[in-house]
Figure 1 (cartoon, rainbow, N blue to C red):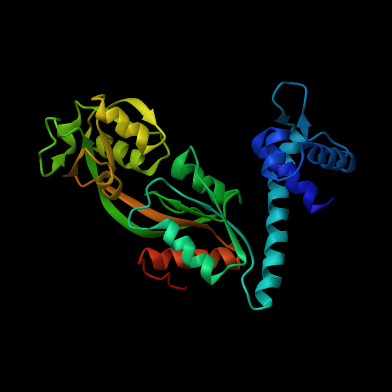
Figure 2: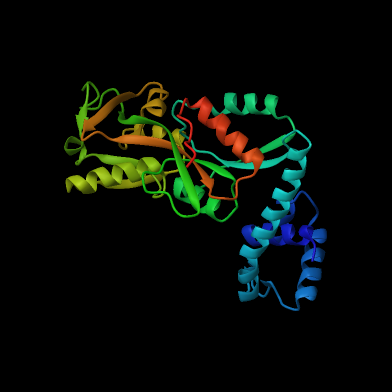
Length: 300
């Protein structure tokens, strides 16, 4: 069994496609198919059910997947530790990012990190499931770090360090009945039509929690995955949205009013895998902390 075989297996398992797995692995499909076939012969099991249009993991494949991830992670940590012993950081770090990062300028931060550690490759990933998807991916070793908006507690496998927080604002057309208000209460928005993001996104969770706590209903007929679509719907008079203050201020031609009764707060944290963070990932986490002006983590 070779690490390359496991790498191809994980890529195909994640994508549920040999062609997409090959693209993700930057190789040709025939090489991926041949490597996985050899792996199946060595293990004397079928890892994928190929009988339908879309492949699926067999029970044996599902059992192998977490072990394969752990083996690949151990191999990467071994390579990174050797490079660190030579006096420089080396390796790859996969970072989950969000549409909103508050005061954190991600491109500028990554530029500084690259200049300081040119041998480290940073790969960026977004998740349709938002912060919840990122936290799950960190726990499953699919991401090394992730920027998340999550107000719940950390888990035994994923640690959270809060970087920043900011108020949330109601974003609407300038001719909306509430556009000229200086601040708003949640109760004043209960009759509005909402444009919101999918469950799992931090801003959605904060909004849902506030309305549930107040015992108020909320109509969310429009679920979107980006600010451009959200603001387009707002501009056409189809509803309002709640956004972090920094993001709300960037939506030109629209009005933004803080929601303060009760205060709606959006938080930004960095999620790391407990006990399995490579030196390169630790360095990037520190760069993120410094860029966000967050306090240093205290050692126990």
